[in-house]
Each structure stands twice: as C-alpha cells, then as structure tokens.
Image (tube, rainbow, N blue to C red; front, side, top):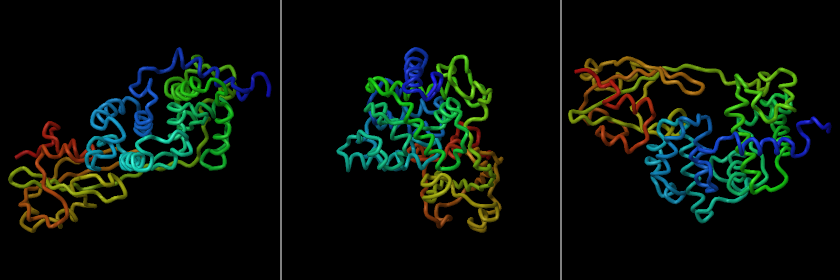
Length: 357
C-alpha cells in the first residue's frame, strides 16, 4: 500500500475518530449512552427515517416503554399506537418480538456480540454491529446507506452493490478500516463518525468535501466523480394505487375499525375498511344506506415506493349494518390503538376532515 492509500492501516479510523470528537454530532437523544435498549431502539427507528422525524417519536416511546421489560410486557396494540406515523410497521412488530425474546431467552439483557444480536427478530448485520460497537466496543463494521456512500467514495469502490458478492466485498473492506487500538473509546466514536459524515458532510447530492477529514485520500474526490458512488443498478420502481376507505359512524359517533391483514401495507394495524373501488365499498353497505354514502375529497399518501390515492366515503349506519369483523370505537378511544398516519389524521376532528352535515 502506498502512503496515500485510503486503506493504509488505521489511517481512516484515526481521521474519523479525531473528526468526530470535535466536529461530529453529540447532542442527539440516543447518544452519550451505552444502554443497548436505547441504542437498539434508535437504530430501528432510524431505518429509512430521517433523524428529525425520529426525535419526537423516540422520546415518547421511551416515556411509555422505558426499558426492554416494559416493551416486552406491552400489548401489540399499545406498541403500534406509539409507533403510528413512523411507517414500515413491520419494524414495530419485530421490535416487540425482539423485546420479548430478550426477556424470555436472555434474562432481559441484550447479547454482547453482533453475531448473537443477529439471532433476534428484526436485527440485521448493520444494526447488530451498531449496537455491539456503541455499547460493547466490539470491533465490527456497520454498513447502512450513509456509510456505504462514505466508504465507496473513499475507496473508489465502483462495483455494483445490487450483487451480493460485491456487497460482501465492501463488508470486508469496511472491516479492514476499523480501529485497532483503544477500542473502548475508538469503536463507538468511529462508528458514530461514519454516520455523522454520511449525514452531514458526505451527502448524496452536495458533498462538502472541503470539510471532510478523509478528503486527502478520497478516490472519488481525486477522480471528481463523487456522484458516481455508490453503484447500485437494481432500483424499485414507484407504483400507484387507489384505495377506498369506508368511514362508517353510528348515531353515537362510534367509528367502525377493522384490522389490516398480517402482510402488506399497514399490516396488522387498525384501519377503516379498505376496498379496491367504489363499487366494492358500496356493495358492502345495506341497500338503504348506499344512497346516503358521501364521498369526501380524495388525497394522496406517499409511501417509499408507492403513492396511495385514498378515497374516504362517509356514511352513518347502525352497528348491526356491517356484518364483518371489527369494532365500533368512540373517537377518544382511537388513541389507544395503532392507526396508519393518514387514517389517524382523517379521523381527527381538528384536521378539517369532519364531514359537513
């Protein structure tokens, strides 16, 4: 290896550790702790979700579930109710299942190695490594989206990460770059430093290379090709779907709520009944109620790879008029169940969606 090789032993680690100490982020609510419960919770919440969106949820979640025992003891509905709005609801289901396994199989203590952590529900290699690095100073690499961008640019790694063998090769290189000394201090700071660089300096669209501690040996900067990394050819295409939502109320103001299937969008959450089209919705109503059903203005809910055009239809019914599985709940009872964010907003009287008389 030449003197300017970014893979030179400990060079990158030293730069990142020093930079993080003086320029990295230090005030996020899940930092400055080695409590694996709090670190794990933040890592799961931050998957596919921006820091700014997570901060409030993180605080409220911890207030309700302050430790892994409290989360394990909770009902799934309670967990979903505190997760609603963060999206990717399989994360909440896995979070709950993981907490129960930590209590049942590990005496309420998280395993101390990345390898053991990966045996728990919802914990993949990068999340396991983050928890093990931050909490137990294990010498293991992380490779989330931000870190992939930092390392592929630094190393000039232009192989297609859509192929498993190339991602495995990047994992091996990421492991080579890890600190080798003073791991108790260096591993948490190095791991955090890579995250901070990806989030604040080595950004996707406008990297601030002059502020980067790795700029002297960064291959992408030398090539002037920062936007070419990382390479991943297989991308999911956006799609669009229309859903019709039945907003049925009885004379006392109770709303009919059903549970979504265990798989698919909003899986396992409580929701207004969903139909593929208006005809299917109307067919589910008693004949005499169909003429009373009032369509409300449709609106679009944006998911990561799909746009949902939602068509609410409001109708007043007697409770016996909907012979399907579900429950009739007063508006104030909705706070205790997990509702998808757009449905929660729709049913909130202050949102402006209350149907006109």
